[in-house]
Length: 612
Image (cartoon, rainbow, N blue to C red):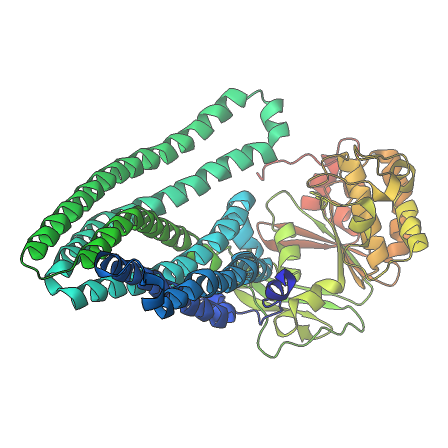
């Protein structure tokens, strides 16, 4: 039975990838729409339960009157129909309705709702641009996804549960008392008005401070995660004390919001206690006066006092539910801005998969400044023929890696076009574009998964013999077979740790090379692909690269000029422009920047030097 209700919602349903609305309630509805029918059922059952509970109070009042005026000998016979009817309500109707409500609410909604939000938000964020992730902490982004998912659920379910139940319960209770004597309902009406005024004053203030607190919590979490992510740097520079101070600053900011929130809570509780005491006193006095004038029965007084005590108990629950509601409203507002950001680099509506026949690349009059007025790349043009091997050379900051990021469409061009076999890369899907490009970068990070999963990542190949062959050609097989993690997993099943921290830089780079070898894409981008390798291993891998590059279009960036000197053509960049082009020997003959860089080599490595 539980599984039936759990399966009423599929949190992992593949919905269209749409940008969430930036307006608050539209944002809420965007994620709530799939569960709207179930939430409507939750409201209906909550209303029915509230009406039955108030009916029980009415019955208790009648029971007091029957006991006061009835005949003890014939009491059961005289009231059998009413007693049996209330027995069915108490023993059957309420338990059955409550059980159905519990099943729908807890099995169908509570668990599935936030997971549905996390799934849809995660799918959307995975398509965000590199700029989006470069401008924020990874921990902060993940934290906002997790927090916002819970907060959206809490906002909606509290409104559905609280608003429906309380409005129906209070409305029915006041109507019940007014039917006996309108004056008996007056203290409760006044209490409701006072209660509304108290919440009107305090809740918006709690909402504002909760929004501040949610942001302060995200900043605090981001600072802590930043230290943990870069723990090797912290230890290397012996700056644990500085990191303590850095984290303490954000923790102090968080605690300031906590103190201000608790002051408001204390004032709110005192105000609530005062109006609850006034309700009980006022209702008691009113009931006695009405009884003295024979305007109400003893049973009506019993109902009124019982409801007043019930209201007092509910007032604390309602208060914290409403406070929690606005706290979660603040959390949703905090996460909304990030989760609803438009994707800056997205496929055009009619984008087609890229079909690569020759792998010729054309950089046509590129302009890119990272959103600034000038700098980086300006009017750059370059033709790379099918199967040609190009080496990009230049000092740090010349724009080499930026050019590769634009080829991979990590950023949107500010002017010009990039074409592959005549197809503008803006007109094809990003996924198909990157499927045809194999990349090995200087900063190689691996997924916290097994060696095997990291090598086959991005490839459809699952044959273990081919995976082992790729690892062998990347000279990674010898160290892979000797690996073992703390759980006893060995070889290709070994987990590599977050970002591959359990492996050395050279080992990570060899895994990345094996991954590209297995992918076997027609275009190959090597951005300092062998920088973390020692000379002996690099020399061995160069043989694998020679076979890998055969028949492919290759663009290689290297500061170690000896690794690219044999390329078909070398392109020298400086300050975002192409300043020299030719073979190694031709460029040495020019006596320009390339010749100067070659002369500054020390042991085959190019030291970064400032432009004169």
